[in-house]
Structures are given as structure tokens and as C-alpha cells.
Length: 504
Image 1 (cartoon, rainbow, N blue to C red):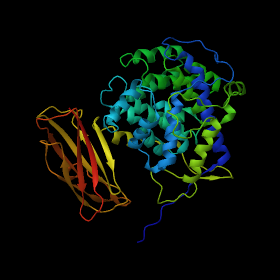
Image 2 (spheres, rainbow, N blue to C red):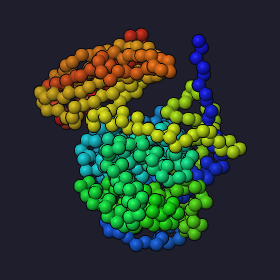
Image 3 (cartoon, rainbow, N blue to C red):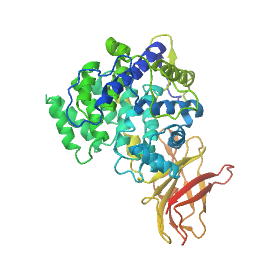
Image 4 (spheres, rainbow, N blue to C red):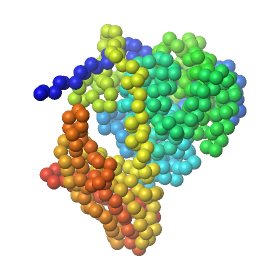
């Protein structure tokens, strides 16, 4: 019996309404960043009432800077080709500062350490920090109403300087909220969607649940703030779980009123430019420009002032309007001709001059933590290499560091890509420094089985899809030791080349 074709109903966005939400996102981001920056790092409860900057002054904010670079990467490389390695290359070319996790990640990248290991190695102090969840808007705005797609890009981003730390969990939470906010404008719904994307027992989820529980019990925001600080004391200041919770606290206790919410969030202290900016952008997406107070919007103007970008390499948007135009231009190409064959990780959209139509989408359809559970069971020290027909996962037992005559164990897993539906035997050949050797089975078999929706392609989590290899160093170990794994499969012309960088 012939199989019925799947029902395919792309979601329709009125292009003017979508533009208004995206523009409000960037204006809200600028307002919160400028208002919060003068109080950044203060560890007490503040008592601000609004701007302390002069009218027309926009303070620079790295929260926005990196997103301008990511947008450029999507434009130049094509959105479908952007991953952590592409973002790492753009980072080293365009982002100047080397503070905190930015510096650790960039230093590891320059040493040849690929993401997400670049966010893990030597980064115990900052992998749980704030550098990534503050730059999620670009992923939400380019994947409106599709949190599954947004969080995948957001993780690729966060992993460059946070690896598998709480900084990445927080990033997934915020990106999911903001992407879903293009469809739903109920804060508790958005929080629940965000929580459904991260592990239930992670510290980010724990901090957010403190806010929710206290709010439901009628406990005031200042007491809740103090409880968050106490609960996060072991992590320290400038860490993601507490500061993301401050942003949630601001919106929840402020009733999503733009002024009240932002002032409460900034009054919580600590990374105030980040919490204020995220409150502003999230509310902007939820409600559009109508939610932004006219006096605050007039005070801040439209300009974007950067602090982190190495310029001289071409154009970056200089205003919120220009940035919105760039995002809409990108969307106009990706949302023009939706196709069920191209639908992956969620619905597709079209822009229309008519009414927006979200079909039968429900909050429940956005729930689920499959991505997080699958991704964060990997080794902390791991990376992937993608090819047209397979993805290779390399997992080290510990840091990629080896001593003379020492050993380093690793697992190599080959997963078939869905567009190449056939079983494959992969052969591994190692090119290592002189005197080094690789011990273990040097082939893997990627299989396919029949699923409930026809043929489903994947590599088994056990057996021959994974092989364990022990790298044994020779007497000569340099500070940086390069190697390559050449992976080939019969009757396929393109080898997969997996770079190895082992520190001495």
C-alpha cells in the first residue's frame, strides 16, 4: 500500500509584524545594555530608576557585537553551513577582546583546539559564565518560532567559549524562549519551553525554578534575589545560572512591563548590562515596538556602538534599523520557498503581506529535551567533523594532553547522515608524529534499521559504529602535536579528514 505524503503546512509570518518584532528586539537590547552597563559588577541590590547616561548616548556592549559577526558569517557562508568551527574562525578574525571565557576560547582556537573543546580546556573558571546566553537574539531572529533550530545554532555558538558548561545550558534556554516568543507572548509558556530544552538537574534550571517557586508562593523579589545569590555562591559572581535567573525574575515580577521588568532585573546587580539587555530584547520579541516606552526609545536613539569588533574588514550594521534590514534580507531568502524535503528540526515559514497564520502550533509542540540529552552525554573533550555522508564524533577520555611515551584514549563514532541511506564500512588511517602509533580496531560500521516512519538512518550507540583507539606517543612530544585521521569508505570519492591536536 502506498504511503501517504506528510501534511506540510508552512507557518505564515506577516512581514511587517515580523520586522516590528525583530526591530523591537534590537532596540530593547540597546536600551537594556546602555541602562545596565554603569552598574555592571555591583554585587549589592541597586536602586536605579532609569538611565544615568545623557540623551542620545548609546554605550557599547559586546552582547550585541558578536551577533553582528555571526550574522555576517551566515550571510557569507550560508546559514546551513554555519557551525562552531565556522564561528571559531570568524571569532579569531573579527573579535578583539581576550577577557574571561572569550580569551580562553580564543587562545585554545589559536592553539588548534576545535570547539567545543575550545570552551572546555583550561576553562573551569569561566565555562559556566555569561558570555554566550547574552548573544542568542541572532539565532532566535533568524529562526523565528522554531526553537529546535535556534538552540542548535545557539549551542554551536556557545560551545566555542563555554563547551558543555552551564553557559551553554543557559544559552539554549534563552534561545528557545526568544525563538518561541515570535509565536507566543505568555511568559510562563516561554519559560516552560526553555526549561524543556535543558537538563532538569542543571544549575541553570535550578536557579530558574527558585524564581518560579518563590513567585508562586508570593515571596518578594528581593528575598528571591538573595536566595539566588546564596544558592550560586559556590559558582561565584558573573556566572550564568544566577544572572539568567535575574532576567527571568525581572520579567516575572515586573509583569512583563518593559520599564518595571528592566529596572528590577538591573537592580538585582552583577552582570547588569547582560540581564537588562536580555530583558529588553525578549520583551521586544514578545510584544513588538508597542511595548517599548516612547521616552526610553527616544532617549537611546537607533545607533549601534561596538566595542569588540575588529573593523577594517568590511561592513557591519551601524543602527538597529540597518541590523533589522540585514536580518530581514537573510530571512527573505530562507523563507521564500519552503519545501517539505527541506524541513528539518521543526516547521518552515513564509513571509506574507497577509495575516500571520501559525496553524495549529501549541506550546506542547515546542517541548522536549532530546537535543540536550543527546548532546550533553558526550565527553567534555570531544568534537565532530561533518561530511556529506557521515558525521564523525571524536571523544577523548580526558584533556587532549599527552606525555612522552604516554597514552591518550579516544572513541571514534561514525554516524550516517540521513541523505545517504546505505550501510557503510569506514576505514581509519592515522597520520601521526614520528614515533607515535594508534592501537585499536581501525574500522567502524554504520548501520541502518527500519523505523516506524520507514527507513530511519542512524549509527548504533554500541557495537561497530564506535571504535576505541589508544594513541601512544613516542619519546619526542612537542608543545603542539598535529595528526590526521583519514576515514574512507568503499565506492565514495571523498575522504573524511579529522584533524587531531594533542598538547604536550
